[in-house]
Amino acid sequence: RSLKELAAAKAVFVAAEKGVSWAILVLHVDDGLLLGSDQDVRFQRLKEQINGLFRIKEWKTVPLTFLGVNLEKQGDTWVDDMSAYIKAIKIPEIQKKKEDIPLDAQELTAFRQLVMRLRWPAQLAAPQLLYEVSLLAQKVSKATHKDFKDALALHAKFLTEVDEGRAALKYPRMNGVPYLVTYFDASLGREPEGRSQLGAIHFLTDEGVIHGPRPAAVVEFTTTKSTRVVRSSMAAESCSLSVAVDRHMYARLILDMMLRGTYEVKPTWRTDCQVRGGLVTDAKSLYDHMSTTGQIPQERQTMLDLLAAKSLLEQEAFWLFWVPTHRQYADVLTKKMKDLLWMEFIQTGTISLRETPAEKALEEHRKRLRQGQRQRRKTKFKAAAAATNS
Image (cartoon, rainbow, N blue to C red):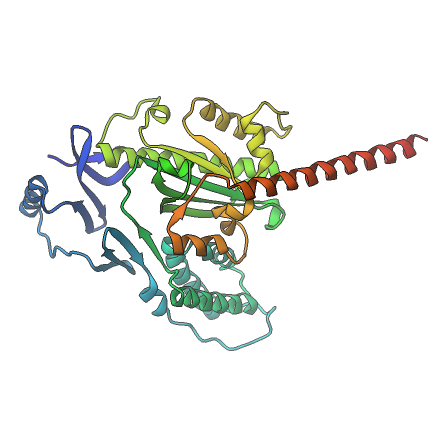
């Protein structure tokens, strides 16, 4: 009776008292994860009630392995480690042929199995490699021997990440007021069919992140192709913003319920949610448009994406921040690159939304360069127009 199912997340149950949760139960098929303190009498009684209602095969405690994830506790930090899973991935052997030759049915099955085995750790613990896995996954029906070669090279990258300690995610204790930070990004002109690759990564930290570095934990990360054709960088970034806002608000709702207990989800839940948060972009034009009154884009869907997000921003449902590209954590989710920023996060375990004086000076320099480029284009356009008229 103490546990109540979340209306916004089925199979997740929370027990709370006076707006503070003391137990969380998450079910997955015939397994479950029960969180609480063994020192709490209410929690001990809850376990006894569950034992009385169900035949529990075995109560496991950490460290344990579930679906390839090794879960352990290091001091006050929880760790999800997929190193053992990655090392156990078996490489299928196929006959070497020219790179442009399509894989036959048997080879295609082997390729598909390898990609799916790589996708699992990428989705759970290795955002720095998820984009490359996503590219291969989009070719599972028409892969060539070059694609298979690329999959082997990617597997080698996974092993390197294991050796260098980047195949695990850490969840440190949070002492401040919870705050969700979502970095989002988009690529343009890199994907086939005029689509854009959209990426987002969500960190749980505390409100101190607005003023400087704070401990953070990755809640979720995604990369996906846009569902529609985009024809400009503003359209691509706006599409990414729209998707990121929806996921950001949903994640905050779930976090709020897990911390406070279940409650009725009213039409005003976006502004009522006690867990606050912000979105982060490296697109200065998008940030300027959202922060000030600018020219409305001509593309209808882009206009709708911006207006919907801006309405929530003006209601203070979320905050919007700008960072330079070298501090955009979602960048690696939209393109193939060596992610130095992620390497730094693995080492420090912190993120920050505050711009340093050096970063501010660099951006001012880049702003002057952009203004100069725009002015030169205008001058060149006017000269060309004058020559045509004459």
